Image 1 (cartoon, one colour):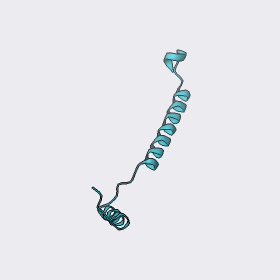
Image 2 (cartoon, rainbow, N blue to C red):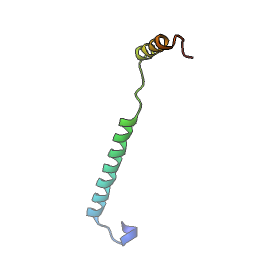
Image 3 (cartoon, rainbow, N blue to C red):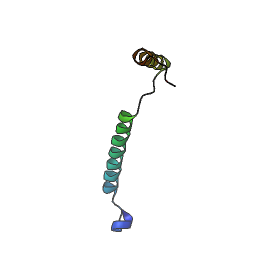
Image 4 (tube, rainbow, N blue to C red):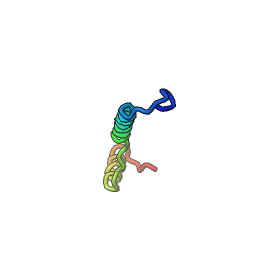
Length: 60
């Protein structure tokens, strides 16, 4: 803000920090929601068994 207006204003600085934090939290939350969950070994085995039953062959 000093570069733009030529003076320091702590209230504006705090407002910008709060806005930046809110934006960062929103993007981090979206990334967690979108992130694909890794399957456990048991779940992978179940998926392969289902594929074998439905198609009759083992996927590579």
